[in-house]
Amino acid sequence: MYTLTNVTKTYEGRNKVTALNNVNLTIPDGQMVAIEGPTGGGKSTLLQMLGALDVPTQGSILLGDVELSKANEKDLTQIRADRVGIVFQNFNLIQTLSALENVEMALVPAKMPADERKERAMEALASVNMDNRAGHLPGELSGGQQQRVAIARALVKHPPVLLADEPTGNLDVTTRDEILHLLHDRWRNDNLTVIMVTHDPRVADSAQRRLRIEHGVVRETKAAK
Image (tube, rainbow, N blue to C red; front, side, top):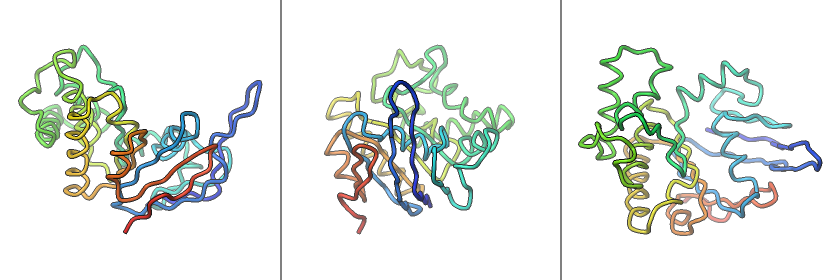
């Protein structure tokens, strides 16, 4: 469970920017949440906080019983390695590595034997129907196939939380629906907490719960049933 209490994030520069403004939010384990809002409204900042990629200026963020807002960089790195998988809009695959090798890279911090790492990576690719393309480079895959590999890379660690930043933003409608179906399938089968940032109403409406963030303020637009 995520518990955010009075979370504020400001950036200092020529002008002070408040990306998050006194956010209070609870996300229970196993919930699928979509976060919408205009560009610059604070969506990506919120996702970075949830993914232990940044810390708030004020307030607290709990992931279970761990306070991310006060954790040191070593602890945050461990949390990212063990408890959170992240999927990006632009896939962020290493172009010189095969699909299998890209997925394996997520397990390097775990320092497991190479054969176990390869086996886990193949299982993750199979879970997204990409094991038959394990040896292909990203440039040899379609956008939808690359996003499937990126999802496998995020899930290979068996994290309880999956964060997705515009996971269908660069895909056509048919491929978007395929990826959305895949995310729902993994959410149900793996009992994941899934939090998606999206501009796509179709993606947002498919979520169990829908939030909107504007000017750093979060409000509920569709509560989970």
